[in-house]
Length: 303
Image (tube, rainbow, N blue to C red; front, top):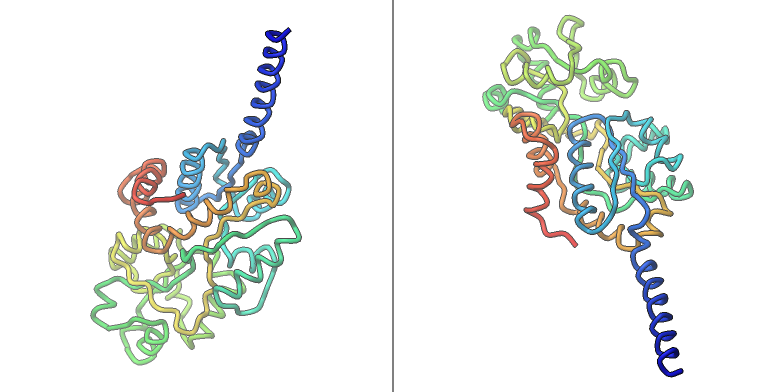
């Protein structure tokens, strides 16, 4: 009888132990689907996040190569559990805000608007992938131009400026919040022949080769640093902030209690210089996002 009782107690203990183990690992039982957009920075962010979370026991599937609105729709519909998105994109594209807001105010606004939708904006990184007016380094050094206002003054006072071409992508040239209000804000004027719509990648190459003196660039693009392009200070704060933030479905955070702290730590490790270096490694040095992400994670201590 004593033997049978012992067996029963052992069997019960095994069942309880199994249930406890199942409960303790339930946070990692469900797959986390991570969505990403269709440009280098997003591929790198997705790879960094996936490698980091997998090393902490999560099952992560990455689905990348999407436009902003399609990625957002998939997140809202529950097809994605998390994404990296940008405050400016949420404010202007998703929420149709027209207010001029600083980085913190914009973050708080989009965070508050998304919370009732079950989408939680975690801590914002200082990575701000916004627009900038870029000059070739030689031209910037010769003229001493550091701000867009200084560029505007140079264009008004220098006869040579009448031959300078401003290169930009077609989207910015035709957006109602793009080229036209930028020129109005800074009092700049270009003839039609001085404005050239180009593939975004060609703008960097043309600036690098001194085929352009003025070009529209993105602040975290690796080619800014790699090609020695000087982004001018937007001293009138025309361009909205585009801080990168991990956005996660509420139920995903509830099922994974440590996830928010882990993603916040990752967000804190990102800034413009770090992202520029990683983007450059992919776009100019020919490295894969996987290798770049691995190097980043080896260099940073995360929880």
